[in-house]
Length: 216
Image (cartoon, rainbow, N blue to C red):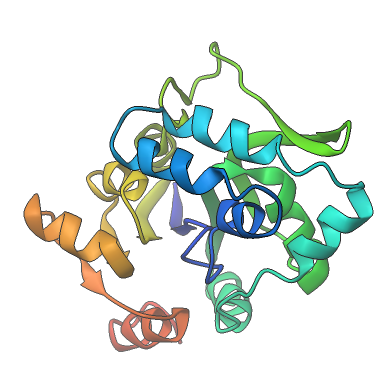
């Protein structure tokens, strides 16, 4: 059994802004009303994202330019390297789409990181998602079941760390060995009495793991 793995959400955790907000602000102002319906539980997450991502209507070069402009927590770059240097494996676990995550990884030359997310592809000036109901990690609401992914990783690793920032991350937090929480995830975990380590950046996580002797 491998020693340990670090699993990270992407939108709002690695990135400072969810990609769907970038799309809504630039190309789909009607999405704000759709966002309110989604937050009220009237629309499934995957349906909300699919509608937003197919409302871009731009050439792929422009979409990639927008993706490259997504602001990220750049302390994640040396953090990933330290994880790998200390015998850990780094994963990204996102209920968004791997389409823009892969482009961000290309921009920053991030290597050796596997991505668990909803498959995305460019077609007819938009981003579409290919959801497979028969996939082992399928979720009707999110497209991908984060808790299922973490459970599967725990069959391979002695310890699985997780970091996230919002409601879909609650499910992974319940099964991870240690959870680092940013943003609204902190309050959500407190409400459900799920233990977590509060952080703002990956530099905070790095200090914690160094203090615990996980990173040398």
